Picture 1: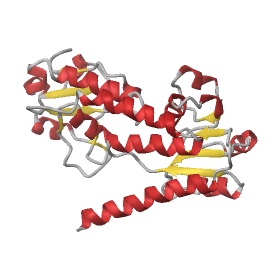
Picture 2: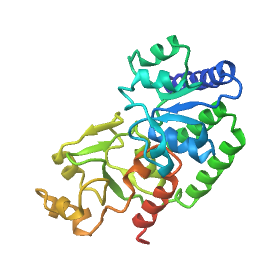
Picture 3: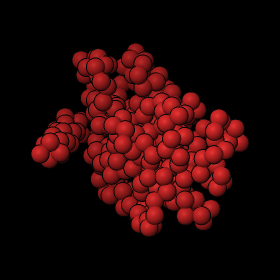
Picture 4: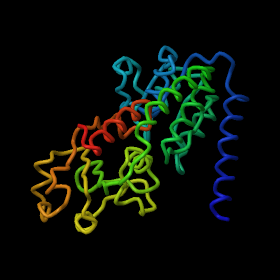
Length: 274
């Protein structure tokens, strides 16, 4: 019952996003600001890079993004800089309790706050929402189709190895509320922390050792350093030489167009083909 109610609430929220974009966006909006790297990548993939008037400090892909005006980071954007760029539209993730979005709206700037991606399918939804604001629905359909096609070979798995994903050193990992947990599933593995009702958190080393993963995926650090941690030599992943450092950290950890290729890469490694 609670699950069905949650789905209904999500559908209502998404419908509201579409209504907000279609009803309140000025026709032919040509000056856009992106406050997240994944949004910037999507906008370029949709062929709308020329419409970007500004991006966040962390927006570094594709290379052309580096040439765009920088408006600060996601949590502390430079409002005066944004005002000076006179954008028609600002794409932002949902700010929890932040007054920034309302301040921009008070200045007459349209702001679209997009929901957090918790599944790979949510990334497709983000593409469609951004495309709706840019008037590029056909391009969005093509991009989503390309991403889905790229994932087809990564869906089936006969035996799912238990995977420990370390997003950053110090035990930072992903729980079930992160799209990265879903990415591991789609690559044919099972996140050892999929039972944690969190997006990202710092897992204790004892918890990792207790779960004894079949495979380890590091987005930061080296396999050698990992193997030198206390009790690491007893882990199945280390004994079997199954510590992977071959993913592009930004491409995999951002909910954007490049993640499909990284999932395929991870699947090939989990299958022993790489």
